[in-house]
Length: 517
Image (cartoon, rainbow, N blue to C red; front, side):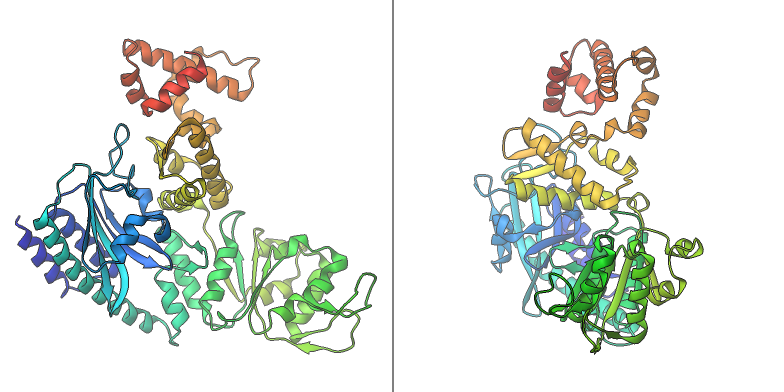
């Protein structure tokens, strides 16, 4: 097809009834098909970063990355210029996509030709489109002109998509709420973001949007590490109280003797050590939101004191005879099933019903499908910045391992796993571009992961002596026997053995050295 055919396809889509994500995807598909290169992306500016909305030719985890403009000079140059910005092969500026092009696992991982163009909507910077090639000299003047034309078409696509989205949102919201409208596009909360596009997380975002603008108390429940505080922040950010305080209190850390002082405050001299008047959390959160984290950990006496305030709306500082009326929106969270706690007699039924006017369930990470890959990209980019690396990417097999693992600690465990893996990968691989390999993730030491290897190679498993070894020594012995068998099958061809095992060649050589092979 000629390029004019792809241009016409984009123009025809402007008159079609499409949801925003489908509209963006079709636009990027036409761009990728019309112009040469290995990868292209549509990115939206959110705060100080560019967020990929649709990518073609880039690894799946790139959709979870957030490219801070002050850390990526190429992207910053693109968005600060109204025309097409072309970076030839000799450009010394680091490319944010180095090592992130699909199908590239070894050898020269750098992008050789890159260009991009800013997108402006209603006179304001909206984002950018980028085009990259592993081959030098692909983008000539003709391609640059075509890129400029696609950028203007992209601005029309974005403008129409946002108009449609705004109309749909206004229909869904009984009251026009600017904060909720803005947050619907992607819940951006200071430095944290609710990342994910699985059905469970989309349903959760819809529920947050539904209840955020109300004054109902919300009870958030879910396993440890799923992000309950992040949801509480979203509820506050999307409410009419967004410009007022969000006060967080960890109920699990409140000793009974201090519960009244922490929640309601005290006056000078109320008890030993009370050297001045002090406001409690309810007063600090007045007209805003009070987040009671781990509310299920409160003792019976603390539950009674909390219930009294929720019923009356009045707080009384310890040592004072005066009561203060407070207007506080309550959001509570627990990793316990509070309805079961009520039945067991460990949590007050009247307090539970006060807190649970609108329940929200956060799904565990194991039920969120490919969200784990997007989250991995998000945390990898954070660690890349923290460690001062040019790029930090996942090696072969890592994506499948992340998706296969059960994640009992949920998003928090994933964050810590990738933080450790990044440090180990930097230790093992000198240079500005670092690859996280399977052994850095350390997921193969989990029983479920090892079962996969044992199932694939039962002959090795049966011949591996396990008696008298600790678990890590047994895994090393298994790995040693497996590698030796594969080397024998490939006539000691180490490159072929690495490919057969799905390992990067550099990592494979380091493993051989560590195992003494």
